[in-house]
Amino acid sequence: MKEKCLKIICVILAVIAICAAAFAYKLNRDNARTANNSYSFAFYELIDHMEDVENYLAKSLVTKEANHGAETLTYVWREATMAQVYLSQIPISNEGLSNTQKFLNQASDYSYSLSRKCIKNENLKQEELGNLKDLYNYSLEVNNTLSQIAVEINDGTLNWKELESDGSSMFAKQVSNPSKDSFNSIETNFEEYDGLIYDGAYSEHITNVEKKGLTGEEIEEEKAKEIAEEFVGKEKIKELKSNGFIENGTIKSYSIEITTNEGDYITIAIAQKGGHIVFMNHNRNVDGEKITEEEAEKKALEFLDKKGFNDMKKTYFIKEAGIITINFAYEENDVIVYPDLIKVKVAMDNGEILGIETTGYLNNHEKRNINKTKLISVQDALDLVNDNLRIESTRLAIIPTEYKTEIFCWELKGKVEERDFLLYVNAKEAKVEDILVVIQTDNGTLTQ
Image (cartoon, rainbow, N blue to C red; front, top):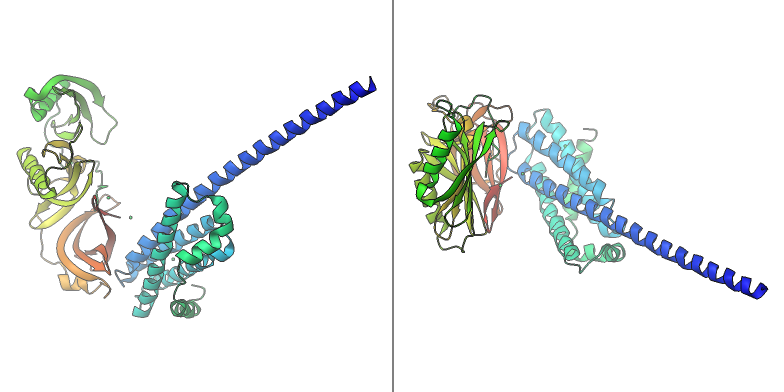
């Protein structure tokens, strides 16, 4: 009896031990999964903030003018500080991250000190701009390394456990040390200021309470259907129906859905006021690229002219899956007017127009009667440019502001090394209003 009880107790203890081991394994696995998720979140946040550091450092090289320098350098300080926060949360040994930590500390502190100087309305010296250029160059190296690590994590060739144990050697191999002389120079400047910190340009156009381009009388739903039918072409339509009235949108409109004879779907929004086309989107498969970008642009311009949108000029574009989307801005008296924006989608297999979006144009378009008198000269605008920026072209432009106003500017397009920039200088007050980084990709030209 005693022996039987002992066996039962042993079995119970064995079961308990197995359950405890299983629970411990599950707990460790869950903890590891949670840790990995936390590390991944921190890592990709680090990448985002590092990319912003790079872009804002790049913008800081374009102009020596104090007002814009204060704003740009403040962004560098903010993004570098946030990058440090997330850098501290990923499991790579301190030795492996020492150069990156040092870079972020220097970028944060130095940009902060220079921003204080700019706030006092003191322009940056050439030596200080040189130091910023050193920081920018190193940011490129760091971001290249982070991108490579991201690729290896995503394809499974690297995991956080390996990073934790080998992160030091990885960074030593992939990230070269920053110039010692440049950092010494930066540190010297710290003492002087001790105690003293992104798709096409303006595609997110302003939305006015007064819809300047929305002209005409209000129409009923049946009239909207007629306009949609005429816009697409009655011969192409198998079925047309209304999806109701969109009252809460930027522009009040009727939503129309069309089924084509080929079985494709087209969605159209017709403005209640004036019966203007707000957007149209045609979903169909595109059979490769058989026309050039120039031919697609020509098709788009012909379409815009036919639909009554005259004097439009291509600004930026993006190409994906055989479809090119081109941004067009209104041009008046040789001045590009960015708020008056229209986007056109063109199929590159046959040049068919697959979409149009006119919200910016309908919100802002009017005849401006542009007066070019009493403007600063283009040379006055160029005087605000850092010597690092090699100017390639200049023109007058009107850009929107966050305050729902417009500013008359000189648009200066140029390069710092191999990176493209657009610098906007107020054509009446000789001050920098905005700087955009132009991003050239295999699929198009965007700005940030």
